[in-house]
Image 1 (cartoon, rainbow, N blue to C red):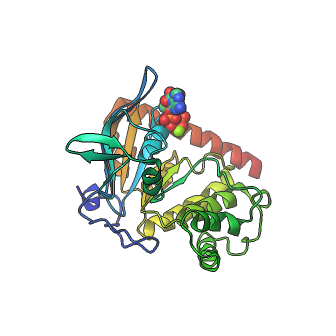
Image 2: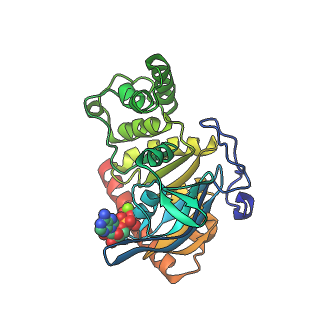
Image 3: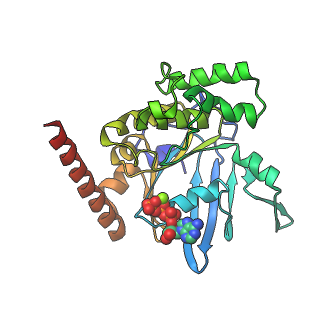
Length: 293
Ligand SMILES: Nc1ncnc2c1ncn2[C@@H]1O[C@H](COP(=O)(O)OP(=O)(O)OP(=O)(O)O)[C@@H](O)[C@H]1O
Ligand SMILES: [Mg+2]
């Protein structure tokens, strides 16, 4: 598999300006094999397979309840899996494989694995009593033991990069939703992750603020960050993703180049989901137009 074969983008595995993408470019950075997850009797993930190569941007689509968030949380070890395996950069997540027997890693080792992965949620979850700068510095200083001066310089650079160089001293309550989400992205980047997971990063935002967050994500993709993005923003999927994966009811229904999946879906479930998304978007666009009139 290659991004060229998937074809929608000019992007081949890209060199990283953010984090050293140490993985061998022919090996997937994320490899999920037959991932299963149940909550009680409810089987939420029924055997998900997904490879994400270094520098690749994969957009996950699917109806509410299809398991998108759960899958991201499994990659990031916020959930344990009941079956299958997930590797990130060659490391088996959550377990040591000793002669085919899986042994749960210690919390400390799991925390170390999780530090390699940045996650951005729908809600920004910034510390309200800290400025944008302090929010971005916090984890490098507290978790990685980076010196304050170095962490501050890096946080300033990252805030500049997400277009908030002039807002470093603002508290979250003094920032718009789009600005807060950009701080959240800078905060995740401050840990120099190998992989960024985004779970509907723009869905809590007013429509007019969506673009500024997507623009930052687009830049990140251009700089070579490996990203798995759950979003209903079809323009982002079309313009930025190397691959789109459509999930429904805990299985991958369809995967392919964005233009193929979005413009020419092969499965009825994908078609009906996309037409529903389109009508929702049109309704929102009409509302925004009304407000502007
Ligand atoms: N901690 C949990 N305990 C019990 N059930 C859960 C838990 N987390 C998720 N679920 C269930 O798993 C299913 C998949 O949820 P998930 O949040 O992964 O879906 P999703 O595709 O992200 O949906 P949405 O588009 O609404 O965010 C849902 O039926 C949900 O109720
Ligand atoms: Mg979700």
